[in-house]
Length: 455
Ligand code: ARG
Image (cartoon, rainbow, N blue to C red):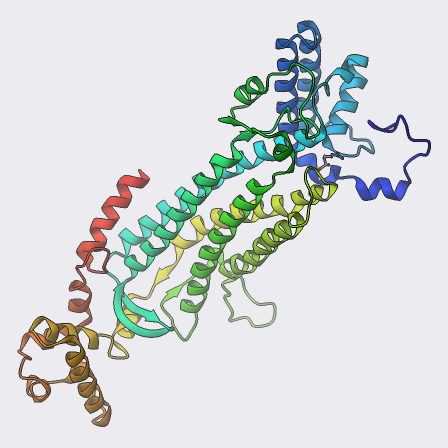
């Protein structure tokens, strides 16, 4: 017997039964389903739709199911979904009274409710995991505060920067990620319960009451929208995708920098794997897998977009397919944040190599341009002057570092002895004192700000 087959003359085909079942996936929502049912039943009693005594019995039956589920002792049968499994088991336990549970409710508002409760918890977890990761990044930034490395544009050396400044760039990205999750949370935090199948109900229910005891800030104001809306999944999935894009970029840089060619850092052995063939190998599998798993999260986001784009209002069974990918997405995000928090603090830098490379490619040429600009030379002209110097260096197979003041003066009489000082990477970094720039003073101030914000 099904919840819905009273008018059916034929039994559901076995294969169709398996095909339509979502139990293997929505099992995961069991706790939320029980939470929602308990709130619903309490409301039914409060509104005198069922008796107080009846509600008590139903609630204690539901709680017993909850305990069994927790211990893994709950007996699933060939139930269509988690809602059916719980209701079936409740009726087996407490008799026909169990059949009152679904009064004034549909599985359409029930599943929307379960998914919202789940998503709220996931967002809270992810936000706190992001904060943990930010703290780990901040500690690393402090530890390596004055390490100089080449900055890049187009993956070409641009100007020297502090490694700590580079780390803080990721801290900023993660902060925006956190904001995005928190802002989406506001729209997840809306109760659909009581929208029933989509039209509302003739029973005198109190939607605000259930919303309140379930911890929702708002109640969905349109019953059709309440059961049709999956924006909250899309928003969370898109915040997740952007977060993963950041983790993936970070991973990519670590993979590159760990290579023989860059040699900026070394990954700790406890977070690397070897090769079954080449005994010398130590591979950066953790960041590689983060990069790889990012693809799955994007796939999940696009699956949701494609799922929803043609659906007429209100509920359609297609929507059952929203869960698997979304759950997987949440697991990926959480595990990637967790492993990153452990992995990143363990990398070891080769500070000498980083500094040596920061000097390669005449990365302080712009410092000379700015030197001239400060002496009143129009920027465009200063740029040309330094361009000429670089051309001269190329012809004479020399580097900026080897320039003498006499040579400099041949290109502009504005150059004084202190210009030679500006060519050093340390002074280059020190001079970037504009707000948010890479000077040690600026970076230290940002580190202090972050320490307060993340305390
Ligand atoms: N298993 C369904 C889902 O995940 C629950 C809602 C079913 N509603 C329905 N009218 N068949 O979407």
